[in-house]
Each structure stands twice: as C-alpha cells, then as structure tokens.
Image 1: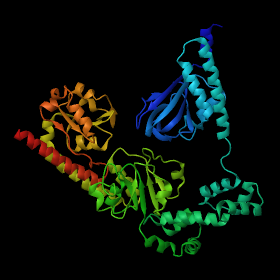
Image 2 (image 1 turned 180 degrees about the horizontal axis):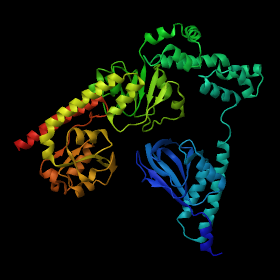
Image 3 (image 1 turned 135 degrees about the vertical axis):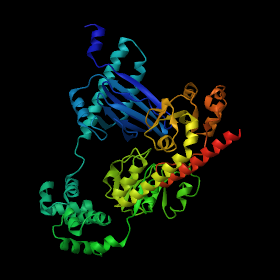
Image 4 (image 1 turned 90 degrees about the vertical axis):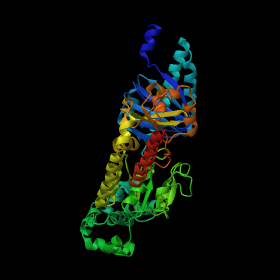
Length: 534
C-alpha cells in the first residue's frame, strides 16, 4: 500500500491552537467529523447548537459530527486546542452520540497534563509535511484517544453511593405515597445499618428528611397567593389528608399553613445580566438582592439612576464577577430567578437549589414581564404594565414621525476597542425600540437579527444616510472621526450622525424602557432643532 493510500486509510487530524483575548470570540464552525476542544488556560463559553455553557480549565469537550460550535473567551482570555479527525473507535463514537453534561452531541471529560503534552507535540508535528512526522502525529493521536477512553471509563463510574441513591429517590418521589421502610432494600443494607448510615450522611433520619422535603415544597406553594387550595397543596407534596398535613406543618414551622401563607411577601433575589429588578418593581415586588454593574453605573449601588430610589434596601450583586449561590442564599430568598450570562452559567449547583428557577432568555421585553407575572401570580399587574408602556410607545412614535421620516435609512452601530458591531432590525430590545417604536427606517444591511461583528471599515463601505452610535467607547469614536473618509459619509455631510449618552439606556425593563424612550426622544428632538438652526 502506498503512502497516499495508507494516509487515506487512517484518520487525518487537524490541530490548531487558539489564543483568544478577553471576551474575544472564535469564528463559529460546524464539525465535519469528530472534534476535541480542550481549554488549557483561562475560561470560555461554548455555544453548542445555540445553547451556551461554561468551559473551565481541566475539562475538554468531545464533539460529534455536524455540531455547530461557537466559543467566546472569558474575562481573562483563553488558550484552547481544537483537534478534528475523521474517524473514531466504536466505543468512543457511541459515547459521543449518547450524550453529555452539555448536549446530546457533546461529551464533557476531564483532561490530564498528559493530554496537553500530546496536543503540544502534535501541533509541532503538524507544521511539517514529511511522512515521518505524519505517522508520528498519527501515533500520538491514537495515544490521545487511549487517554480519552480511560477518562470516559472513569466518568462512567457511579456518582452516588447507596445512601445518595436513596436521597435522590426521596427528592424525586416525595409527592408519592413513599414508604421509608423500602429504602434499606434499595441501598442493599439492613434497616438499622441504613438508618445509621443515612443519618451520618444527611444529618437526620430518613423519615425526618422526607418530612423536610415535603414541608419545603409546601412552603413554596403557599407563598404563591391563590395558586392552590390547602387540599391540593397537601396532595401535591404527598399527604392525602389535609388535616394531618396541617398538624405536621404546624409542628415543623410553628404556625398553620394558612397563617404562613398570609404572614409575609415572597422574598425574591435576581441573578441575571438583565435588570429583572425593573420588571419586579413594576409588579410591586422589591427584590432582596439584584444584579449591579459598578463599572457602568459608578455610584454606591451599581444600579441605574432611575431605579436608585425604588431599590433602597436591595442588596446589589456584582454581575461583573462570578456570583456564588451561597452569597445569594445569605439573603434568605424564597425564590431566586437565575439567568445564564457571561461568567455565570446556570450550572448544576443552581439547578439543584430548591428555591432557584432558571429562566431562559426571551426575544421581547414584555415576555419577561409576562413570565415573572406568571411565576409570582401577578398576571393582571403584568398586563397593566405592558399596556402602559405600549401606550407610551405609541404616543412617542407619533411625536417623532416627522423627524424619523426625514432621517432616511439608519444604521445602529457600537464601536468598542477591537469590536465593531452592526445591530439588526430585529431580535434586540434596543434596535426594536429604535426601528419599531421611534419609527426609523432600517438600513438594508441591517436585515439580520441581534447584532453582527464586522470590520470598522464596513461603515464607510455601507455609507448610510443616518448613523446612531450606542454604548460606544469615546476613544473609538474619536478614531473613526479622525479617519479621512469620515467627512465623506453622507450621514456626516447631512448632520445625521447621532451620538446620545446611552449609558443608562436599558430597554429590556419597563422603567428602563420608559427612560430610554423619554431620553431618546428628547435627544432626537434637540438634534432636529439644531439642524434647523444650522
């Protein structure tokens, strides 16, 4: 067999090292064969088939063919290896197809220093084109597969011992007529040995633990006013007799279920990249803790000015850093509303928390109001909030119509160091407000959703009639304006370059949206008056 035929018979590998700066994103790609993505340094967020997950040092991701992958570095940047290959041994192929901690098409494994050494050697050899280097690279490749198979075998070991298995069973079957006497048999222990081991591991007897779980779940239901009757709540947590349930509840909590439900409002904490406290305040609920951005809002709280007064007494959570679950639990919230965002994934610790609700993102601001209204039994309040803001939007669209009609096709851009973005005409709260509420006509190049990153020179190529700069870096704006082609832009010649102070523009929440409408309308009206004077 010739060398060419031998190479065709073996899996050809392609290995690349990617060093990404802070928050830099790799170009999205789709795997044609199997691939290994390993994080050597820093932190990164993976988006696998458009769902985002965190990747930290010490883990690698084995991807099946046809997987769409995006990767963005964290605050400290990232150093990654990407290895792609055309074939895999049957056991690993099956493992990759069966699922993982990420997706149904990705397998998450621990990596070892030996893997890093092999990858570094393979990358060095990839720069050579001779046969000896090729076959050595293949040998290292199969050695790497061997290490991966060993790691997979280790990952497949049971994660729970016999006691933890029964704890998990109670957690998932507490609402049934669960017989505690059956648990020792599940754990393959005698009743006395099981009770001793359970109490040593959990801190209470199996019966007491079951009661704790049921009462905790009942308290969650009782905090939602009007959601269920006492009989329905009792049955939903495993008690067929509501009177017996009431006696157990009072013995545990010191008050009856009815008195508990009427005693206090729901304590809500927010962990999010969005100011969901804005939505909660509009529904009449002040959160006990909520996200803050101290580098953006340089005041004592890190909240925007229009929320300062209403949030007095709310603890700010620095959303620019990792927010730990224990930090939030210190405020004793009945409910934690958690969203996954940069550096703060909704990982297993949040998903296991009894009082945490992991909320997905929505395309429109009012969807958040509706979702929170449903969670907190505030549906009628949510409807009133949405109607009020929509009326304001309609009023200001009429007020700005003449101005927006005269502006021509407008492009929304954001200029940051090394990051130039063009916002699409849909899929983003701010672009939706500018185009649908204010009534500006979108430039044809803005037909995409959300935003896309492009070279800054693209602005000169598109030459829009009007330009709106949002959340931009002043130094980057100054650099653009110093470019020789700046004065040739038709937007510059016609005086249709808009650079409002958008630091507090936040159109995702009711109050923030109102503030953005009022401040944006004032800015555009003043800009129109200045053009008339000139």
